[in-house]
Image (cartoon, rainbow, N blue to C red):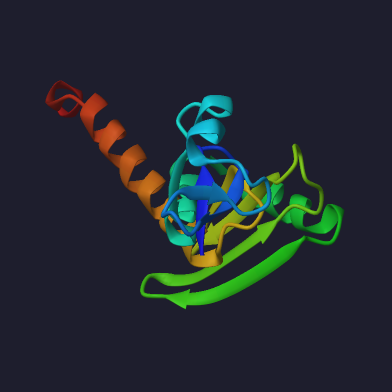
Length: 154
């Protein structure tokens, strides 16, 4: 199924369908794509995978302490919880038990012995969360290495 959405927005606008004239319409609204784009600048048609990728791209990631991770997990039952074995150790993710704004939530992740907090859409798949945390780790490492000057080691 194709969706009409604004990249980075946490909610799809409508499902997309083609009418008998080949015109793209919102399945639920019945409005043509151009009308939906006038109401929602930047709206585009894409697959569910495209929509999920746009959600993943808007996720913010920050490192946290183990006690902060454990506290969040114990405050209330999570909306979802997953774990998996990765090539570099165990990965665990959960969505905090309370949504912040519509579908936006605080998401927690553990990769090996490191802990992370993310702001993103509550329905992000476990593997997408793990991928986002890995990308953040690489970005933080590069930023740290960029600040390090050889003079510090003399």
